[in-house]
Length: 338
Ligand code: AMP
Ligand code: TRP
Image 1 (tube, helix red, strand yellow):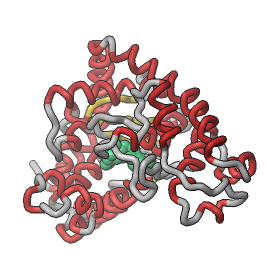
Image 2 (image 1 turned 120 degrees about the vertical axis):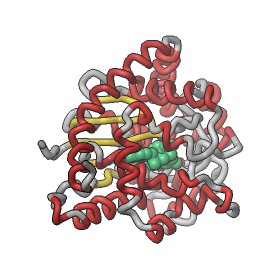
Image 3 (image 1 turned 180 degrees about the horizontal axis):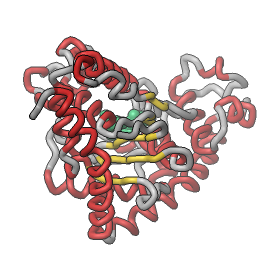
């Protein structure tokens, strides 16, 4: 069986409110990697249901993430776009890996602690083993590179630990070097986009305030309004990144500008040093609208034809399955399933 050397896998949950953080931290990089890698981009609907999802909304949101991938510039013919639940190998490998990963490892996952909150007893079992399914997503394709936002770093480390433990545990039965250790790609000036209302919280799909995030379905007016109202401070824009320390809201807006314009934060500071946010915000709004509204428009066009999206997802699932099946068959052999 071939061992890929440049295979990318990543996923986004279809939980609604796709936002600027998802775009700048992840989806935008998915697009760039197509030139150099064989890419699989998944809509991880099985991860989504680790917290309650209304079934009709889940179906809509699944198509919407697929539409966002395509609208952002992912080519579903040359690469693969599909939804996780259509390729059963993910769930099958996840079970084996559930028996490789350790309770102690999973207990340290900060995302579980955040999402489960004070009521751990009430969290789904799926939410606890969520990172194991994520490891299976990646390892079933023996993917080598995984573009994600900063918040997924710990999950990627766990995936590497699981890969290594599997390789060791079954070394008497041909598992040496079977799974490559997937490398996280955490790229650009906005790996962690923060809420527009509170610079200490990350921009998130589930924040109760719609003003905290710019979504990929926002209108031009929504974007302008949200940036105008974004929390800032009274100080002017500093000359160096040092001057952004202790100013999380200012730092966030400068980082967003840098990521959208393809510059570094230092470039942006050099252009705007000494100006107030009153002058900066309209420029940021203009840039955000220029970059996001073509994607929003294309997503809307694609969402008008759900049957076409379903066809693309089905085709992607078939090709993903063809890559996953031989790996799963080998895993079964290694584990001793006859
Ligand atoms: P999720 O919405 O949790 O499925 O996340 C999809 C992708 O977007 C993952 O790679 C996340 O790391 C990334 N992401 C989510 N929120 C942010 C954020 N606020 N800033 C940067 N990247 C993010
Ligand atoms: N956990 C990721 C998130 O919420 C989504 C995800 C699921 C993923 N499986 C993955 C990302 C595999 C990268 C690779 O952002």
